Length: 340
Image 1 (cartoon, rainbow, N blue to C red):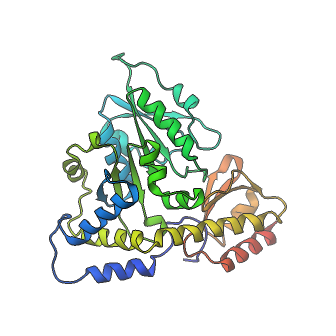
Image 2: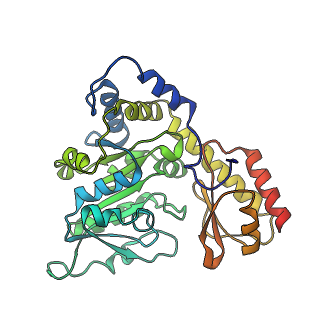
Image 3: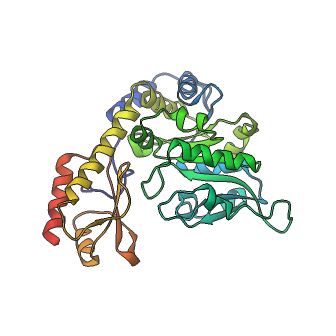
């Protein structure tokens, strides 16, 4: 498959990650997380997210999000999220099926929830005929590539806690957000009042494996059993942990995210010289959303794979990866110019 801009899931694996897996592939080790690699990785998560952080490794991002929601909510409760949220659009109803809870979606102009927007869903407390709002879920960065500031996260956490609710962060691309904001993971989560989060590395150079990070100790109840019930418990977990060890110890998360963010900025800069292309949202991480004539992007898809994000409005999404090169950008823009 030609290297393109369809998804950061299309990229390969960082050599450091492959080497870490190979290094862990020696002798025997206890299964299901009782090994030295998991112990080291868990210690690293406490360094990056705070001493209270408890991590549970899972196979994928949907598993991480659903396990977090299961920790926060019962089936009669509800999660407030943006209409564009991954848990609402791209997880095939997994939270509703597995947890049984309801998603209360909010239309947003830029993918970001605000306290005022969330308040429109905060009603019916104590009324047995209504699903009870129990959690707020945000994506950082959002599915539109926009970022919450640290203060915006704190404001949502304060609103949630004032209503005896909880705040979850879908952090599939959290590394890109941390690099863009120039902050640590802890500053963006634990110190901002986040109760739990999904932390991913697959989109940033890892092979597989995501993690549930519990920051509020009150939520850390029987999660190991729930993870098993959700078929998210890996037997040879050392190979997940070894990846996170390399990812967090060597600064790989930062280098890869800096590069993919920088490539998106280069793409944005190149597009400024292309008449007929309108960039729809601020380019803050490694994604870019553009509006252009339908005939053009349909023909461009004959050369490059990418997603039509909103076909009705001719908006497409272009994603940069840790292995995107400047030549990739230049060739892509040259192809676009030819078609225009």
